[in-house]
Length: 267
Ligand code: NAP
Image (cartoon, rainbow, N blue to C red; front, side):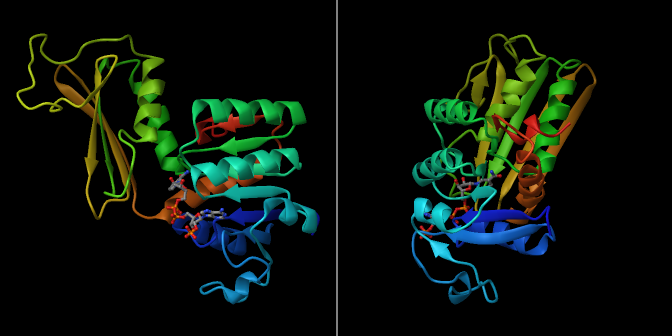
């Protein structure tokens, strides 16, 4: 089939990687060409527990991988260091990266954007692939035209390292496009316990909740005289991110620059 997209998944044994392998397996116009893994080099994926029937090669070395197989797209769901190396190598080898790995520095993002531009090749880096989360951010940006007071409550599993979440920061940035800086609450308010009012972004507040049992959740609450508006998104499991990965794989083939954030490719 001519319009089949050949895909390499990096990090297939991880929680996100397993979902991505399933997505590729279940999408008729996607073909799993190989995987990149820290272990199991030169085995078949079908020899690894949990991947019965997937007779595709496992590579540890990304250069060897791209020499031996034809790939159109690399889906990377690993760790920041290796994810950066993978993304860079993909761009250098004409393979379009779709990257969910989080934690790249602004300098690394800039370097990757430059590299993509020099090579005239597209890529997508998206710290949140949940389509609903992107819509939540867009709706919040629109609501900010009409409400100047807003607080963000983000809630995640207790293994998350960074606070506030990248999604909360991005939401605040998008709201800032339509909101003038404003100190919210009473002008003489005092925290009797430090941190009670949360992080401060131009006067809007972000609160981070960390609890076992949660996955990734966020509420954006707007308030004005006599009314509040709450926009809420919940990711209950990692399958919630796969519709965004799918649309990214399909879209990246038409791009000739590297874009950041799923909101860049969703109308
Ligand atoms: P995870 O379960 O820890 O999986 C990471 C995987 O990467 C592990 O299987 C790990 O292998 C593998 N890995 C490490 N070094 C590697 C290498 N050199 N080559 C190939 N694979 C390597 O983590 P996760 O929850 O799946 O998350 C993966 C990434 O996605 C993280 O950066 C996370 O923040 C991000 N994430 C993004 C979204 C989004 O919507 N964009 C959503 C959730 C998570 P070992 O098991 O051998 O260490």
